Length: 224
Ligand SMILES: C[S@@+](CC[C@H](N)C(=O)[O-])C[C@H]1O[C@@H](n2cnc3c(N)ncnc32)[C@H](O)[C@@H]1O
Image 1 (cartoon, rainbow, N blue to C red):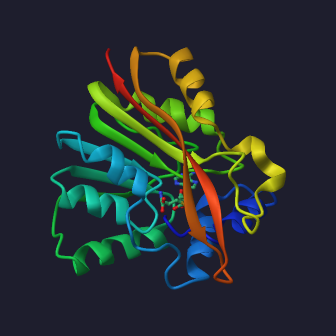
Image 2: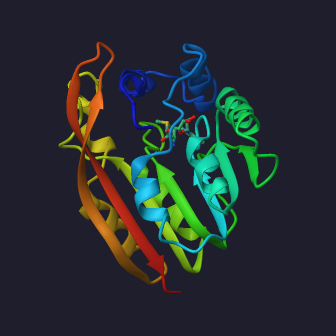
Image 3: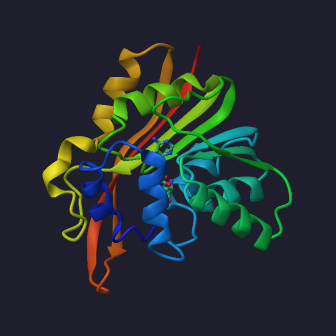
């Protein structure tokens, strides 16, 4: 989602929604033939490139660019999202680039579904939602990591929101890397923190304007 220039306004509106995440996100996706850039997230590439491929879980996979990148780099991927519209696009994108297998696309709502355990990599990229507390998503993601496996969580830093995002008045929905480390290490399991960074990135807005955003990046290895 190297391009997320207008998703913020939708997140803001989600606070007024009736709680049906599937309907809400399907509408968000239907508004545009293509919601995201089609490119994998840069922090995924930066952090997963050095890992030995195995099984990967992409939580909130959207239109599938990260899952496709992972499959192209040897991972066996389970990619999960609440939006059937996004998942249809993701599967079509995978077929377009010649991926026949290696990715299982699953439609699930994280409010009621929790992934199986035992993945070598669990990736959660910009899974922000006013109706899905990030601490709950983090706990669920962490529980799915196998001993020896990696957890990668990337999201918007509350001090690095773009002027056009509409996020300014809901900063508590976002997290710093320190927030992520604190929440992870309070929970079950023993973790080695490999990366806890705030990374700046220049992004382009809906009118072609540019701004610097900040990604909060956590990569941790599960010891037990
Ligand atoms: C901001 S998008 C990010 C998509 C992708 N990870 C990326 O970086 O391009 C958030 C994604 O999370 C999904 N999502 C939001 N709430 C969800 C929930 N309760 N259960 C499952 N997926 C959810 C949305 O459908 C959407 O595709």
